[in-house]
Each structure stands twice: as C-alpha cells, then as structure tokens.
Length: 209
Image (cartoon, rainbow, N blue to C red; front, side, top):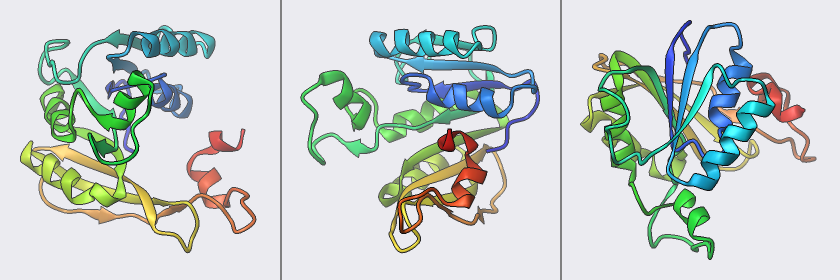
C-alpha cells in the first residue's frame, strides 16, 4: 500500500482500530493524519483505548458513523482511503448470535458497493483506495471499484500455505487513474510446520511479535 508523506487517511469500518494502528506503526515518521470510522459504539471505545495505549492519540482520530452516510466529511477530503469491509453477503454463511459481530462479518448495514461508493467520494482525484477482501468475491470488488471510477492498479493475494487457495486479496486503486494493473507476488503466511514464513514476516513484521 502506497502511503504518501503527510497524507490524510480514512479507514472505513475501522473496528478496533487495527488498520490505522498498523499504518502508524509502519510509517511513524510520515506526518500522517488518520481517521477511523466505525458504527458500533463499543468498537469505537475499544479503538480509542487501543490508540491511547499505543501513543497515537495525536495522529489517529476515531469517529462514530455509518459508511453509508457520507456527511461525516466533505468529498475529496482524503489522500488515501482503506477498508476491510464485511466479507459475506447477508444470508450467505453461518450467522453469529452476537448482533454486532454479525454486522462485522456480513453486509447488514452497508454492502460492498456502498463501501466503494463512499471511498470514491471521500478520496481526492488521483488519490488511492485500498481494500482487503474475500478472494472468492474478487470480481465483485473490481466491478464496484470501476463503477465508482476507482481504477485497479495493484493486486496481491494472501495464502495460508503455498499449496492452498487464496482466501484474501488486497486491491489498490487510483481514483480517475488510467488502466494498468500489476499483479504482485503473493504472501504465503505459514510453512508446513505452521511456523510463519520469512516472506510473511518481511511483509508484516508485527505478526511475529
């Protein structure tokens, strides 16, 4: 994911703040300003606590709001928009008895296209949008991006093991960008003995801590 210096970053559906914290830990000296948007008040409180504990209260702000409601900021307010949207359409897969957890897993309040539409509205022209999503729904993700003028530029698949199908894909797009997609080398998470692979640790050093 390309993160320019002094960028204004928005995370849609931030949950407990994992993505904003990961961005700041990876780029502590870039002068970033990160906003995490989350609808669940309990998750908002958890994200705020995590931000405080890791010392990023000046860089990361957590706001309660709905991804489907785009009045939380003016259009084009951000240089980079990131998201890990709910993976499953409602009614597909086993639901969770906990309502809030169910909303995090399934498209209850907002579907994938709503996330893409809000990302496109909030990012500036030529700004970047990065989603982490279910690999089996890749065609839907690409269609949503292109529908909202987000041109896919880089794609990376995540595999549990080298001999297993990918379950997760990361897609980076540029708003108003020209066609030209780079398919990057995949990340393989685990060796056969369940230890982390060197490439996974190199890609995300924090998973080894």
